[in-house]
Length: 233
Image 1 (cartoon, rainbow, N blue to C red):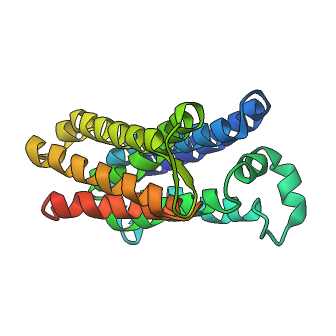
Image 2: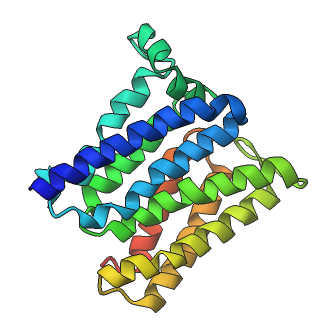
């Protein structure tokens, strides 16, 4: 129990420091980049989940890490009932307003849902979070700078950005086998094939989902695709 409480405290400290640092550097970076930096840094929590030993209800510690940030991100969103809080946490609020107003709330919800159901299989959580943290960030950067062939379904996207997202999702998910495969008895072939399918589903979800809602659609759909292709293990 002490190990779990220590990890829980360190996780909270890491996320809070990430928010503070993002607030400090937001004026030096375009808002889009500072928001993606926050996505990536918080997404890195997936590498800590395997080290929790209490991972099922009612002591699901990864769930306890993710769930409080649903409330925190909502309180600095436009829908907050405590308007003064947006000033006290202006760093997080400014980053949130750089994208969809409730984008970080949806991100926290996705993280919480995945942690609630898959803390005992953290590679499934990774299959949902990696596409959002790494793939979407890379797609946004490449799309804004080099996106020449654009399309618009619910939001403006580019073929270059979508291809980048697919490549980064697949590569990072595949590379994550080196970590999860060392800790758990997983099949490398099944893992790679599942990574390919999850990357494709994540890319399509990101391209076709209305802005902001992709923070829910991408992680949940890609995690489900990965779970199915891994045989539900």
